[in-house]
Image (tube, rainbow, N blue to C red; front, side, top):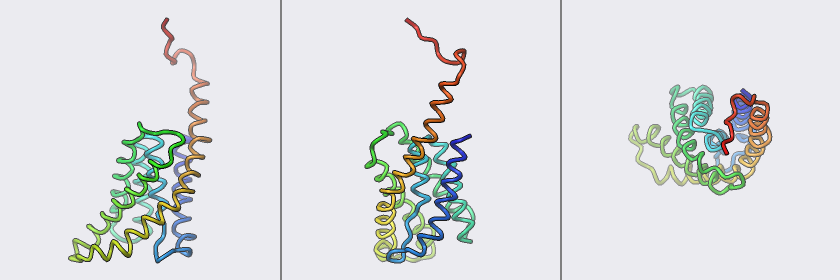
Length: 182
């Protein structure tokens, strides 16, 4: 229950930060995607199901705020959350390079899907121009912001969510704990 509450607060805070503060501080007309950082972190730190749920709600917020087709971003973010949740088994507590790589790859996949379903279907074949003006600045800015933002999310996961899991395991009755065999 605490995990879901913390994730909901993270999603809302990241959405508000992305849609208000970072819009005013846009660099090269690009805003970093904080919701992709939250989705990747939720999937990588927890499980595929948590990554999918987080991605769905992040994408749904973007769909509602953009006024476009409802469900497009929800599907994209949900798939990214599922894919990042597959790497949960490789989670190392102090490793920061692999999650940053996942964030960069996820941003590239998201931009590619946006290009395919937003421009290519309409007949716009200017992929190189789209890549120079949108892909690369957005990926670089998101990865640079994620250096700080991902570390903040990791701190929250370690201090709040993991501590709660350890407390629940400590308070569990002995009848449900596995017996030690000698």
